Image 1: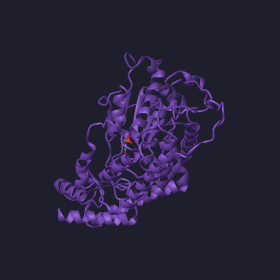
Image 2: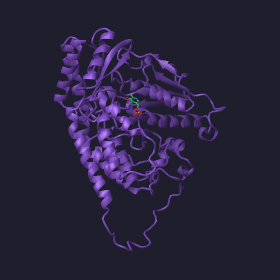
Image 3: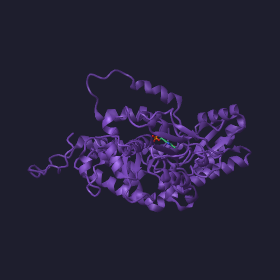
Length: 475
Ligand SMILES: *Cc1c(COP(=O)(O)O)cnc(C)c1O
């Protein structure tokens, strides 16, 4: 791959021959895929969230040696649908509340199909002008929506894990460059030491990113958290200009936010770098109603978030933002070309991400933002949080213990002892009306309910509460 900014080849002979036949073969199979996909989505409401055991057994039919001769495209698709579709977990339906998942808005699924047909390589502007443009546009929209500094740089990566990895690489670059050390060229051997501070309830993927970057997952300084899972700013050690502080917007258990205003103020004074893991919680910045929680988060140096969670685009889609564009480019560029690329120059997508060749995942982000608009994103966030409160109120009224203050979209419920709670979760999952996972938070076993899917309705919540109460009374 040559990293030379050049124009796409002009058409030497513009369409010497007009297109002959329409591509009947691709027509049929693509129509067929569209029909099968719509039938799948229509069926989601009436099937259990987890696949039936028989469906998992039928996967055996896919396990065979590579055939000597290939199989017709229509037959490939038929097998995928008849064997594959029943073996999916219905995460795109409205009653999956495990992890923090989100669905895929129809506008984004459709945009993804078209973009897949385009088969663009979003490496450089000249490998795909449309991919590069939609990244530019959606970055500008998100700067605005999430109230980021106007010159913040961004990259489209596979998820929040890679977004934190990318942001922390920029942090590593910036702090070591200030010490006169070129980490991209020289590596970490002999480099000045950096210190990393995290809250005690840091997400494991931030630790994984630190381990991938040679910063070590076990040499972090862990700051205790409070009764809502928030890092206690008053317990931060003294900061300096060789320190990275990782905070979170959206604790994966409680949904709560670290005290960003205080952390960022201390960091700014000391020259430390603040990184925000906002995999889902960053989207709360789109709604003024959450200002008390989100205060100070725009003062950070870098941010990681997911589009495949609360923005409801298909996998895989994460976003990284870095306040100083030069730090991100320096950490991610494969060559020194970024030096020639002034801040106003056209942005090449791969100068902001670990990957070179990749799919044009900005297409779906753009489609979601355009389809929802500013109000639609805010409504999606508010609606999910409203459903979370409804879950908490209904379960609390029935006598069960809600362990967290429900400030966002996450609810932790205990059904009594750890054994009883685990038994209720097992029974609920087996019944299949809805799906929730278990967690242990601050020493207590809980069922975690996470609401982040555009498709969830009030009726879904009611059906799911009934299923939870049924399981709780039976177990
Ligand atoms: C989901 C999540 C991550 C990891 O995101 P991926 O998209 O799975 O890489 C990181 N932090 C938090 C708080 C999360 O909820």
